[in-house]
Length: 283
Length: 296
Image (cartoon, rainbow over all chains, first blue to last red):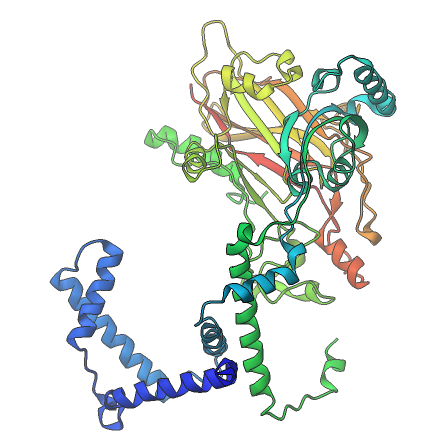
């Protein structure tokens, strides 16, 4: 059965299946019928159903007629375009066909659901990627550099000494600093969430701090004193907690590998000649 | 100025049309977007991936025109990267966000994630700008960006505006906030004026009526700048000094950053290339809000 897992073999099988379908329906496309377009009852039903899905009602007789006429028009122009070779040397057509090849190989790779054992092994190998970030709660006192000028550090240190000296220390003291347009108190934020609101320097420093009043900590806005409250440490999740994510990642890896393996197998069959001189003249 | 090329002209045209057809057909809000065709969210100057696919960062990208037709040649270096749509929604749900857009409580930025508030009312005072929760006062005693000023209560004769901006912590400091007013004069002609209403540092409006520039810390060669000028946040209450209760008017706020490197500067520094004279290397990013309308 290992042979069946080889994307190239899978691809060959699928190709054979397509050929079979083609052989069974080939009379539609035989040379005799190349000037004959048949719109079957099944196809008309399909057009009507498609319409109904979009408009939430069946088409009227007139609308259906127009749908069929559009279908005929498409077929005529499509066949004529093929006949004069418009499918060749067209960037859009090429891209669509390349994409189809890749999707086919990827769909094949995902035919079988991954087993629990495969998923667990995949997860164990890269547990760090699923690490759950730490979270931290804090309240801050903001000092505005435009308002305070060079005395800003002193002002912050004075307030820090004051709040530390109080027994028990306050858990928030925004009124001892300047007004701030964002919030003063934050509950259990991750480093990314802190970074988005206060910038990277502040986020980096915040998670290094011990509980209680700390600072001054610089941010993109100015400097802050922070009261560090609850904290949830970063941890590695159990497999069950992230199973869905693991399935998605595992499938993406399988699909990518199948796509690349197919390409590499096919590439080997070609002799590729690249003009080594050309790139030098381009810049 | 190119006639009809600016959003604010559209707002003033709306006031003119309202006189003819009773409703104002140009009562629109503001959002920013990229208009890029790359599928990438690269609205910053330092990650700008081009307007069209195929014009990615490279030593020769600046030579590639955005469009060259018989109507003229439009250089890609003529465009800075942009922008974002900001929405003041009551909660992070589809419904709340669409409700906010319907009432035009939105603003645009050219890339930075600035936070901007703009309220209009008849009784804001300087003390409101010193309050710790200015938005509470804004909603309680006025209307937000995108709305109509309510009729003046007895005793009030001049509209007041509470405006504030907070910088993007990853971007430049703020230079100034302006309020752009459009109105119709006695002949029904479109008029407009840009007021500097609050700014960083201790600059003073000169005898020419203009606020001096904030300065420039951009080191073009290294595509960097320092936030040693400008302010992290600005807030003020502004009274329209030229208000005429008899004419319709429209007001919006504009928050302007200090100069920062433009994508052309990042490109030159990264690839070690020299761009032709005349290619702008710095830009002043900005946010602009949906307007507030006054109708007599």
